[in-house]
Image (cartoon, rainbow, N blue to C red; front, side, top):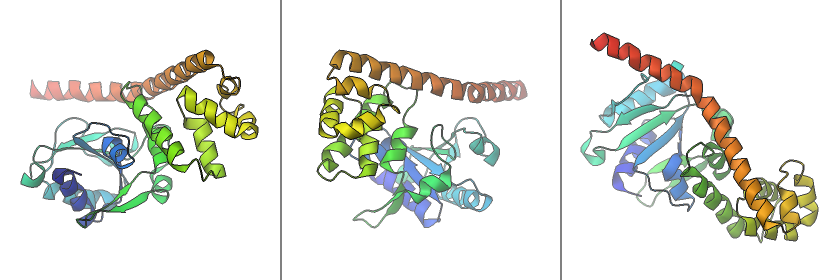
Length: 251
């Protein structure tokens, strides 16, 4: 992990900010490389925790670089607040803060399922669970979908010899490659029939119908992308309103 990122995470930890590392850096932690020079954090938006976060950002000499303002109201409605660090150890590093995500549980529930990490250098931080990270990555952005596939595939390959009910459910619901889904349904055919009602494309894996399975996976992705677009429509409208008001003030 690059030293600027460690500097941000160690500062967050030193100020006892209740937070979860997510985004590209969390994907790197789980082995699904995604090029990202930002630090994305999900935070508890309580008054006390935001106060601790403010102290950490001040230590990092982090300036807000875009709308909306750093305010609990905007965090709780689903907006991301963007900062740029000026402290020499993390100069230029962008930090994005959120407290609410589409398609996942509330912060406290996510925090309960976190992974706590301690680096050999002593820095400590908490990472969003792999299961929740995959849900959070289901966005309208094309670049997120290969990462989702990789995260699920790696988990299957690493744990297929020790399948639990929870793991099998995760694999049936989240795997996104035809070959692996077909292999999974052959290995756990009885469970596959159960999960077919929750994820209809499983039937194509059971039939070893790669062509139909490929189309169904693509259609599933398109549907989720559309849901994400709908979720962000009012938030984008609110941002545009803030930009307009900002322009008027400058004029």
